[in-house]
Length: 165
Length: 248
Image 1 (cartoon, one colour):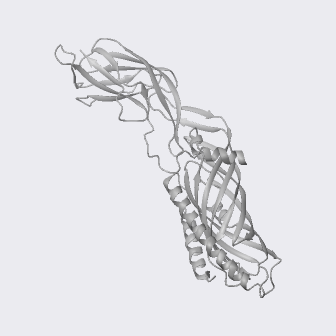
Image 2 (cartoon, helix red, strand yellow; image 1 turned 30 degrees about the vertical axis):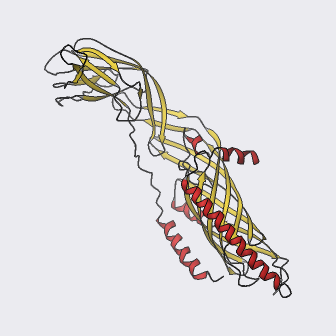
Image 3 (cartoon, helix red, strand yellow; image 1 turned 45 degrees about the vertical axis):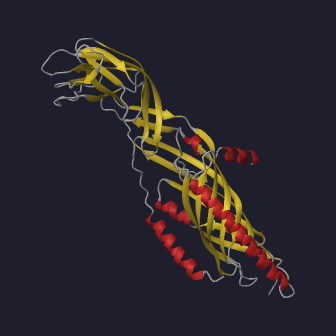
């Protein structure tokens, strides 16, 4: 069995592979955040047909114990936006003002179940949610339609339609 | 063992295509080499007047690559050893074993694991001997592996700038991992009774679907627990015991 030259060549090759092996954490290649994707619509005339409506200059902020933070402030003509949910409680509330120049605003209340979900060693854990119900005041908002109750890290799922007056 | 093998085979609901291809290739290779070995054996039998018996060989091997990798990689470490016995028709029975541990320590996820394993299988020599004292080998083989893994409590942290960050603990868990593997390599006698060798391995986890809760980053004897197919290699130094063979 004349295999010694080949043996040493591959021995050195595998030694090189061993030496080049790095001890680095894999990058996280999937979304880690979960949020409710909201679509803004209104009725077309008096029919049941819904058409997109853009919020002129919206302001959104959570009712949390944290210092209040404003989202989408300065972004005009918003049709879709995302709202995160608290992973420490079973309900979250957001204030929505469609136009910063107008004092009219609504409160959105989300009631849900939380489920801790393992993504991967690279991404760690996140929370998935199951929406039980959504309530809101009726100042600028006409009604709310729940499209998908399960909120995961799938960024393409529309969960909620807010029908404005 | 039989029950575990049954469960692990039952768990193989969706075998990877690669596994099937490699399994078929191995089966064909073994069939071909069995015929070759039979021819070699018969040719040796015709010369039995000169070389009455091949004898026995027991080989103890230690994997040199693991201590090296332990120095390079800070997240895990392990040790492996093997014993194989020459049966007949260029077939070796192999028992491999070892242990290892891993530390996964990042701000969002941290835990430790300890594991011990064994692998059972065979190696089949592919090339014919030059003479009866020639124990060098180019081989292919198959293994069934099992590892017992103890994962300690895992701590996780979720950063949320809106609602506030949360931390939590995942309870400790013990579990078993089963896998099949194909291997191939070379072993060469560099000094009398001292052999060096390397082999490469393709491993296919049979019960990977049971690790959806928190897949361990490292399973001793297998490799990364969050992958169902892994590739690995070993460098062995071995000492052989031979008896009962011809002096010629």
